[in-house]
Length: 178
Image 1 (tube, rainbow, N blue to C red):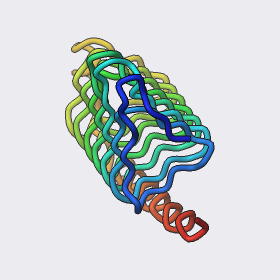
Image 2 (cartoon, rainbow, N blue to C red; image 1 turned 180 degrees about the vertical axis):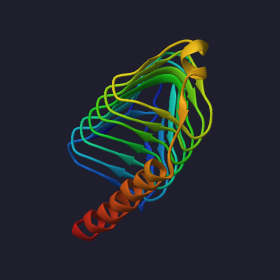
Image 3 (cartoon, one colour; image 1 turned 30 degrees about the vertical axis):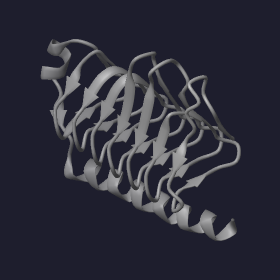
């Protein structure tokens, strides 16, 4: 379901992308090429002066919520996976090639490229450098906790890439059905 917001902004979705009919996309949302938006996802830029940009080749999986507080934005970099049930709340920027694990929460955070976040992590109010690994259930909310992070392994970065590739195939399959 695509809807206008109160500022008369309407979602802009590239023709090559797939948005499931049960997903809700509201307001000043721009979705790039080859993006997969799964059933039950909610992408809301409905508060005043908000915007959401989802760049090319991303996947927004089942029950993901992306929302921006008034006067803020959310930017999702290319080739990034937001896995089942995670919440990304703006202001927020997530870099290229990231993997955000099941049920994780990202709020007021700046996440650089190729960061791998496992399930049920909370990242709030911090900047995460390139290629970091955040374990299951971690709470990263201060510079001290950021400094303690290990680097993502080659296996984790390869896994994130495989998830993106799988979801790109889903886009093509669903587009054939339309």
